[in-house]
Length: 636
Image (cartoon, rainbow, N blue to C red; front, side):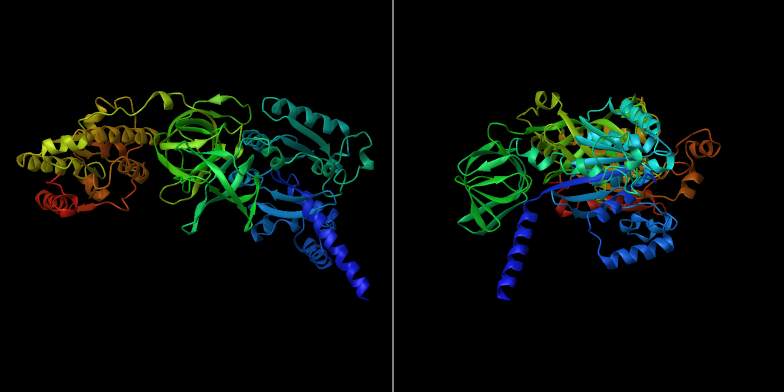
């Protein structure tokens, strides 16, 4: 009995060890709506015997209640887990499933086909080694097929399986397969996708999924599973790239141990090798490598390690450890492909957070070079990016960051954009190259600085930013404040919205994109004036919170005060000092704030002043704020 038990234990141990040694392939299914992505994954789970008897019974019951295949089993129900998905017969979220065969382990991401969920498809593709693009044999190549294929090419996926599904619905005709294949290749030849394998199949019936189909004797290529089991894996390819590891945290349990922890993104590293800490550029020698609580001689791509150095070095979360002889690029301006994933449009000049590896810094989209029409791949002019738009943009960070061009290393060349207020992910990007001017243009040092000018003027330079609707009284209050400061001997200047549009911003209109650029320019001018030692008063409607936040971010702590002149729309219309509201109501002025363009009420202003108070009362409130001891307004 013991002998039999030992054999069973030995067999289980051998099986688990063999399973552990299998390579892992990550792939995604994508394409347009109802092309059969979820059905295909369900078929793969079924064929690989990953469905237990009770699950199979539940699937059969669910197929009768809410299936879309009549009396047949609806394999899509294995994957479409959300109630809304089952009710509508579509995939909304990215669903991940695991299965294995004797040759390999797999993690598959079932990506949604609807256009509004394109952002979820990007999430699924971000870690994929391969993509299966499904096409309904009855419909052929659709817009979403092209959109997904273009995104796959941008994200550097080297292997695509063109799965022409539902061949049973077109009588297994070779002509249907040949036409779709030709149409797809005509489109994909314009993209950088080296390996495309076209397979005719029926996910519902299993044709050419794991075994050759007798109904398509004219097809002599591989089965879907045959390609999945033999295609190269990104992790294996990553071993041949230069060493890269982002520092996630520094482990310092006691004074004799300082481990720089992270996951090796690419390459390999040995004890005794030199690495460069970027962006500082300092170098150090690997003293030891810890992995899984034990010391090892080397570390490879995909492995989580803690590196200990011979020398004392200054590195922290966000630092990038690189191969000494092949360092990453360090720059603060670069060009990138951006896939916009937010309902709120992207406008040049607006600020966001960029997260690349473990680095998170402020970034500004400086220019949209062109948007891409996913149907024709032609470049079109764009002043803004809407949901699911794809464009080439130039970007500028507030400090130098480390990266590689995406085509050279996807791990260090990809990033996400984050909204500063909501902290939602609003975009994904792939870096193309650094901009040469980022190296050619440097900050010039002058001995007479802001502090020296402030001391000469005997004041603390700062920006007072007045915001509110047209006619709210911004200019009136700012004018009264400047006269009071002038009497006190302070050096001031007013930047008024109307006056600026006569000169610096005369080329700008009143679209949302132009308003963003309007505020960007004036905030840069205000920053220069503060650097000159002045107290600058800015009176702009500045309707968008994101743009006011961008303006604030350009100044040091305590240099920027946002003052909201809180006058209701009804009162502003009653005053209408320039007759603009009347014209806007008649349709003579478009995009007028408060009428057909939104004003976002400040959510964190430094002072709110009420229209019911007199000018002198509001002036006193501002002066009380300015003489606050913490601001040191009168004593620089």
